[in-house]
Structures are given as C-alpha cells and as structure tokens.
Image 1 (cartoon, rainbow, N blue to C red):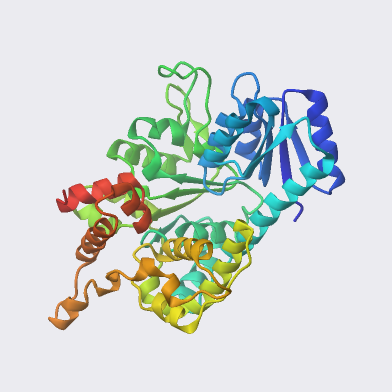
Image 2 (image 1 turned 90 degrees about the vertical axis):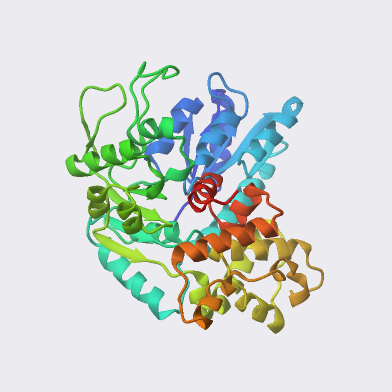
Length: 440
C-alpha cells in the first residue's frame, strides 16, 4: 500500500516544494496550511507520516508533534526547522518526532532519504507488529474467535495482562472487518486525567469550560465509520462509565456543553488488564456496562504460559528492533534462549521487546549470549505461585499481581516510574494497585 504523507507548513511555496519532491517518489501527499487543519485531517484520514514546519502561527510544530504522537497507532513525524532553532527541533524529537530537517533543505535527496528511512523503519515494525505471532493452541483459538467476531459489528472485550498484545489483537479485528477502510482510533483510558475524560471521549463545545476556545470532536466522533479501541477501560471513573453506557445504547454522543446528540457509527473494542467481573463484584465497575462490553470475550494468556512462542517471537522482534535502531540483527545463543524461556515475564511481550532492545545496544560480539542478559539475573516472577503449588494451593491472580509489583519495586530500588515500565503498566495504574494492596 502506498504510504500517505501529510505536509504541514504555513508557507505555501515551501509546502508545494516538499509535496512535489515526495510525490515524485510515489508517495500519496496531502497538504495542510496550519496545525489546526492538520489535526482535523488526522482525525478522519489514515496518515503514515507527518512532515511539519516547526514555527507556525497558532499551534506550532512541537505541539502538533505532541498531539499527533499521543494517540494509539500514531503516524511518524518529521519536523522541519530553521538553522537557528535546532534546540526546539530536538525538543520535538523528545516529545515523539522521529527526526528533523533544517530549512532551507540541504537538498531534495536529503528529504527523500530521511522519509525513506522513517517510513522504512515504520514499515518493518508495522509488518512485525501487525501479525500476532503464535503457535500456542490457546492463542490460536483466541485468534480464530477474533477473526469470526471481526466479520460482525459485535462489541469485543479483550482481557489480558499488560503487554500481552491487546491492542495488536484489536487492530487485527479492525483489519479483518468491513470497517477496515475507516479509522482505527485508540484511547488509553488510564492516561486520561479524570477531569478531561468526558471531553476526550465525547468532545466539547466552545465555551463549555475554561480553556475551551473552540469546538472539539471527541474520540467517538473521530472513530465514526471505523473502530474505537478503549484500552484499560476499567480505569474510567463511574460517572464516565455511565455516559459510556448511554452512548453504546443510543449510538450518539452529547458533547460537553452541548444540547443535542450527535450520531456516531462505530465498532467498539475494549481492553482491560484486570478482571472486570471481579471489579463488578467489588463495586468498582458498573455491571450493566460490563455486560454491554462483554459480548465477545477474548482472553489472552500471559507470555509465561506460552513459552513455546519465544522461538517464534524473539527472531522477529530482534529484526524489527535492529532495523529501527539502524544496527545489524544478531542471533541468540542457545543458553541465552534458555534464560529467556526460564524467566517469568511480568511485562509479557512488551518487556521481552524492551529487554532485546537494551541487549542489542549493549551486547558486544556478533551473537547474544546468556551473559549479555544481566537484567534477567534477578528472581523470576514465574516463581510467584510455585510455592503455592508445592503447598497444594494455587495463588490467586491478585496474589500473583501483588508479588510481581513487589519484585518490580525491589528490582528498581523502589523507583515507581521504572517499576511501572518494567511491569508494562502506566504509573497511574501502578499507584492504583499500590493503594489496593496497601503497599507503601
């Protein structure tokens, strides 16, 4: 499929120059004269790469980068900057841009080369990430059910620990559905401040609250005609849960500050890393919403329960990571693979990817050895529950989760942000679990 590039610049002549260069390379090119116009395009069009000027009236390139990269499945971004504003371009890279170019262009070839590199990395990673690699019988059954569900508009609830591939499965459902030509809009509910959740999901009208200087369409409207993916749906507050239920029943949203419903045509896929049934029993999640979401239930097993997938996953992840880093991929020695197979993987495939990335950067030689994996030398979370088997009792999921948190905190010296990254959850989710389990 031909990649689509969105060129954003308030200088019409320069915008046309960039567009002409990229069209000559065979890319499909769209243009916007402002960041505001670009955001509107991004809301309703599938874009692979945004090439944006750094300094523009209104929203600048850095803020455009931040907003563009905030969404799930966001396009890559290249920022164009004048020679005198290199530090600002570096800031854009820090908030998510893949790279930057200086203006005026060094040469048309410099632009072509950078775009090819960014899209090339993205294409390989997308090819690797878009295929749910597994030979585990349980996972294959889940994939078969997901493919059957994709042919309908039924609401799907995906459950599984963080890092097991819930978003990847949601994207597979979208691609296998009749809505594949429409947008796939992802929302991480755990990352939305509670005070902004309604506006983020349902939109707001101009003047609805302080700072609402213009109308904003919410994620439901942005996903109309396609699929809306609500990740960590269990993190939504009870008031927002109630409004979500109403939207699902009426198929219409009412923007904050609005007075009339706006019809939306979406397919909803929700995901959670906790048992919503347990949350309902504990009074933390609405039972009526749970039943509305749980039409098709897909449960992804953790990586430690499908260790036979490691020989399939590891080579593909190494290939994708090495391409993104611009280095040669290296195979694992047998002892290194055995070490990976014996580890508990509390962060699942996400943690596996991170471990391989760090090892590719730091390991010497043309092969990855067991000694190159010191991060795995500590106690394995797979031990959690083993003592319970020995005593004849199986540890509950909450006991295992609590133990995994304690071990992550121990390994990071109590640093909670690093522990959250190790576990593959948001800092907010980790703090919620700490409060629940009384961990101080």
